[in-house]
Length: 166
Image (cartoon, rainbow, N blue to C red; front, side, top):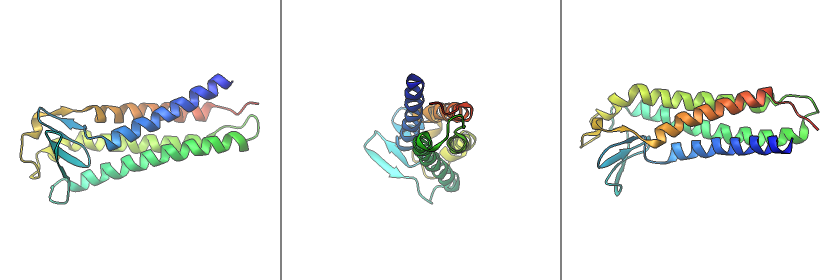
């Protein structure tokens, strides 16, 4: 039982780490001399400019920013609720609250990644870029966001199935 608990905790911490990395790091869309994320556009890693309201797709970027931040916060809250439920639940009860919060986190990261997938062409063709952004490709932060989606989905279902034992 202790090994299962350790696995669940490590899996959840891994999910949170993936969410933090994909939200913060500047590699959602990368090219030869540039990289972009939902916060900045960087040329040669040193010259970074924030994405602001001058960008025609700024509302899409703000939606992605909000849902990624919310997903990360919900994942961290789910972990704290899980720790509290370990001590408060009676034997045989399920971790429904933790599962619900984790599945909401899963929904948020899926929403953010889906919006980016759908809007990336319009986003990178907008007037805020001075170089050939459409020639790039998805970066590792974008891929980590989708992996975080899978991890949060699996852990949310795992918490739903899991019962507290002695």
